[in-house]
Length: 475
Image (cartoon, rainbow, N blue to C red):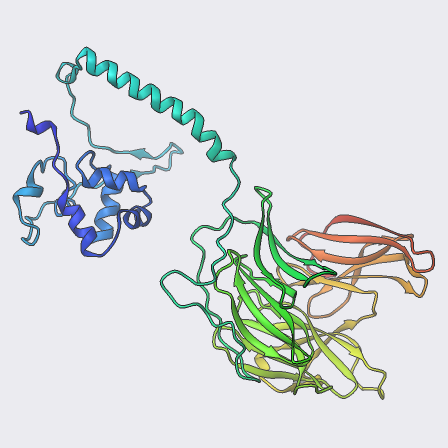
């Protein structure tokens, strides 16, 4: 009976794990347990609870007896060879029953065997040793646990090469072509983070540009990428918050070159997807992370600006819109994953029959579109700021008095259907100028009120929040 109190190692469970090339950590991650618990199961110290027993059976596609998880198997792990089929045995399942009476779900667990305390009676010396060990463990916990909770988040690793694979290319693709992006998700995302660009200028040495993130939970600032070979700009954040798409302006052979690059927020997988020696402006990234639209020169050093659309998943680059002579078209923001707001500016050339302002471009119409394919939304002036609702149903616009002397009131914020239509005023100010607005949630937008004078150089700015009208179907 002495040997019955010591369980043999569970060689069946260990064999099934090693057969699949998994570590104890891999098994723990797949079933939602920890590594120490899996170690105790394999060494026969404990047996899994019914919940984890079911998870293990599903993971290895075996029943509980085949995995050696039943408490009545005793030494069967050593008595049967691993390559011999095990006898069939119905596995015990645990069910959760929820009745419509409003009571909490009842967990039906098998009753545990009762043990007599006299069988496990400890000798005085062993009892004293056990008490010392427990007391030491408690003191260590008091010293270590506070440090674990109060310590800052570990900084992101800076290596650009993903483990077990080759690093994405950082060199420029062939002129006029682009690359498909290579992405992999983070296992543990420490967000939410605010990503920003820090420019450091030096008179005695090269200037540096750093891409940084600020963790809003811990307050830690992490350097994602730092370079002295160029200037980082136009940083865009993916919808899931894990990727940053940005431009790097570098000077080569006396000419400026713009490189469109992407990097994960932990500093890994830096990659270059497009390069151009012409002017590169107004990049916009769709929420589904599939499309990048921007304006650049048709050819190197060409004055003709064309709107290009890049499929980031396939690397296909195509000219999407050719503006009419005298006009510039720049992407402003994605309304959804197929339509883009475009801002049209006038170059003081002969008059055009098209209206000047905010337009809507539909990429489903294909490549090589022209201004006649755009849908007019509203007229725009230089002092107008716009932002659309999170459900892509409404468009908010601000207006103010803007002239050579500065910004001033009266100003207002209006609301209209996102695809154009009648607008209505939802906020106004008679003295201050509303210089910028941005929708931050389903019901709230943030805006800035200015009182700026270009004659005296004085300026004051106030940030405010405005709750948008709820359930408003007709503006």
